[in-house]
Length: 173
Image (cartoon, rainbow, N blue to C red):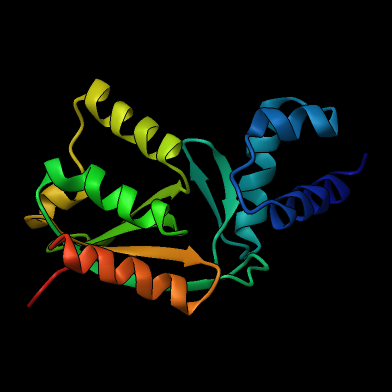
């Protein structure tokens, strides 16, 4: 298979999937090595297509993908020990937590891809934080952070916002 054809197939596979696709899965599907896929991803990015590497694999950014969900950002502020309550409030009400964004005084906007859409995903994320002894990005900003949330429609987003507000997890300036 020609390299350009393979790269087009990679982009098509990423557009088709709303969840991350690992380099190993793409390599197996296209009968090449994982390293070839990593190189292809770099070349695809160089053409201007925005592909994000997540712990679960590659995903097109929301702007690049064909996504008909209602997507909006929300400002939150809470202590690290309240993260589970925040994650559950979002996924239990039908939302998918796409990312976390903080504003760093030196580096500007820092973003971490999350792609959490269930309690199972939330628990895996929390377990990874615990085992790695890593800090949440919001630790850099005294708990203040943004999330991009995807859901079926605006009413689902409003339900999520209401629960986060009731739990006192929204940022209040």
